[in-house]
Length: 85
Image (tube, rainbow, N blue to C red):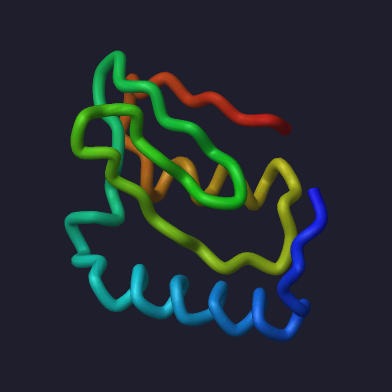
């Protein structure tokens, strides 16, 4: 879908949103999931519960070893992980 907004405007608001989201996270918010809780791993990670917790990690790449490391650090054991990779 095309947007009528310039790429500069889109980048500006994406950065504002990211900075706002990161500033509101606590260390406890960086761990999501749990037994039988579905966690979607994508450009952002979202827990499928009524709380819909999320976290953001800036990475150099999206290769499997990198994603595995992030999942081990931030997703509780026995979570159900869905990813498009």
